Length: 473
Image (tube, rainbow, N blue to C red; front, side):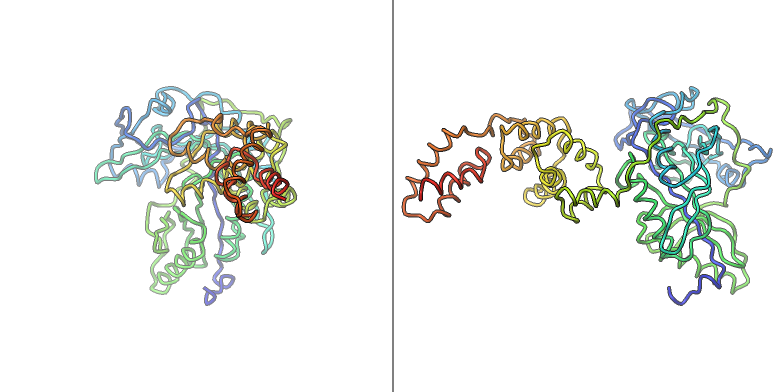
């Protein structure tokens, strides 16, 4: 990579980030969840491209339409309504999604527009039943600071996610409609990224900022596209980065591909390419242009309400705060990247008598330990976790009981907190006297070990040790 002089090559590079928000869908009340199950019903459609504001059909849309495919859509009763099927006009824009998007603009130092106008972006590859995607410009002229200078963010948009591809065949494609309509924030940088490693840094920084707000977490919830060009080459958009770690190598290989074409006297075409697992790229379609945009007539313009918009703390700042309340740097760094962060913050506020470190460890490390020791996925409902921590906060159960309770729940057993209620001081003293009598002649530490084993989850370990020390001395 060091052999390429990106400045001399006239390297220009920008990034587009698409991040799902953790709300219901953007233009209806359906849950924003993706269902990968057998569909409840199916719909078959053909799509054709419409002319944009310029009066022309977009080149990329025309390319897709010429394939002559039909599309089969998997639909679900839980989150597919007439809006997704394009049989009903869009509802009012999701207020929660709009608020989260505006908070993100604040973190990116951007200027929110005076009026939000929803537009239609022609898309006829089957990923949207309407033949277009609804998108709205919400802010402009933002920026982030990086190790290689400021990178500007000319536009920030709020838009609806596309349907999820299931299968492509010769004459038709199959899509899953459960993803269609989930709110997305789209962030586009300018072309001031200096080199491939800088691109990775910018993507990482933007990802951290987004995770500081209420966004979805996990594979597929954030997507990165790279736009790049060199002198004598052409602008290329690369889609499908599964991991930003692969970004530098894929960018480098794309530049080498263009240099090879230029050397052979072959024109480099403006096009969209796919990032492949072997760090190369492959052709997808021609690069779309301005002809694909036209106004959305079914959604009224929106005057953004800036009264409640307050930027949250960045995850980097939260890590330092968590270290101050007792979490290790490793645990703090881990939890801020997880969806459990919001639950952790709620529990810390609610359960003042429980150490924050213990709450974080229970939410993050205990499920890992159950998986490691028993090969069981531990996914406990929030309501049950609240019940457990509430009893612990009241002093009715011990910290030592938590692992056993969560293990039982992971095994499909019912929550039974009475089974783990702490013994009274009187009951505990009598039981410890019996244990000490049964183990006469053993060293103190051995007796404590046996007591701990027998009374695990029924009494506080510190109290067991103190009572035995007092009696045996």
